[in-house]
Structures are given as C-alpha cells and as structure tokens.
Length: 219
Image (cartoon, rainbow, N blue to C red; front, side, top):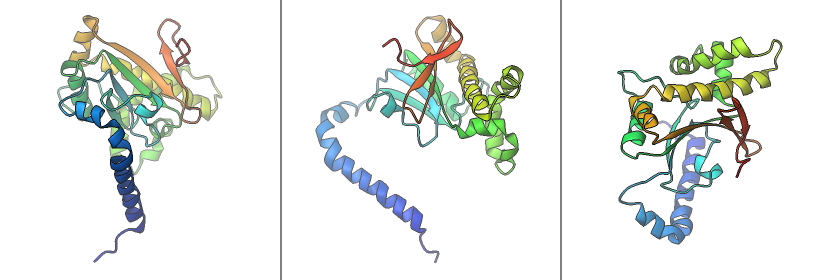
C-alpha cells in the first residue's frame, strides 16, 4: 500500500484546523448572517478573476458572504460566446439572467502565470490544456506585439499584456447574448480592474481616457 504523502497530510490537517476554527470562533458571531443566506443569494456584483491562490476577492474588496458571485479561472478569461457551453458561459448566463447582477468586474492581477505563459508560449510544451485555454487571450498578445515599444522590459510587457487581456475579456463578455441584452437595457455595467498583489492596491480602466487609473481615487 502506498504511504500517504506527508505534504498532503500536513496540508489537509491545516485546512481541517481552519474549518474547526471557523466553526468554533468565527461562525458563532455571524450566525444570523449565515442563516439569512440559507435560502438564496442576492450578490451586488459578478467578479471574474484569476484562479491564482494569491487572489482573494472578498478580502481585497472587503465584501462578505453572498455579496460577490465569482467566476475564477486561469487568466480571468471569458471565451467568446459559441454553441459549445463551458463553465464560464454558464456562470455568465446565471449571473445575468437569474441573479441579475447590476455590475460585472473583470479583474486581472500582477505576476499572472497565464500572462507570463502568453509572453512565452513555448513554456506550454508539456501543458496541452493550458495551451488550448490561453488561446482565448491570443488577441491581447497580438495587441502587445503591435503596440509595445521596441526594447520594452519584460516587466513593462507583462504589465501591458495584463491590461490588454482585461480589456479583451470585457469585449468577449459582450458577445454573450445574456450580457448584450442587459447592456442594451441599461441594466448592467462592466468594469475592468488590475489588482496589485504586493501593494494591495489596484487600477481601474477609465473608458474616457482609455487608460488604467488608480482604483478608488474618487472614493
């Protein structure tokens, strides 16, 4: 019989301890809130972000349980609408037509592994699923190749690519019929963010200037 992996056992123990701490120390003080959520949700927004473990949307937006309906996947990608139904498409449709959220935020982040992979697609040689998935961001890379300054540093290229990808996914989102209909009716807004892991701050796309500006500057 194969011996249990020591690292997996340590990880599982830590997670179990966290569950116990939540149940014994956190939940009792918020029991009423959780009981109020048992019959449904009314989120204030649909948050599309990366699956990166460093990104915790409710933490950096300071929202609570039931306030954000989230779609998380590598690279915060939204495939263009097509007859094939995938998980992202289902999340979009549910957010639009069932939950009827008034706000969508597409949020990229610094040091994104998918964006690094787009810069160096040769690194996907042994990652066929990743190679297929990142095709949904190919146009962002094409734009980078057209618009980045000659001799731009790797850091600058990654920064631009991350922003271009957010803008591309915002446009991809609009190809979904459920989104298009609610946009036409003025029932939903779409915003683009880039979260900075190290500083805890972020940038928000300003359509009037065509630039990403400091998030929360007007608050």
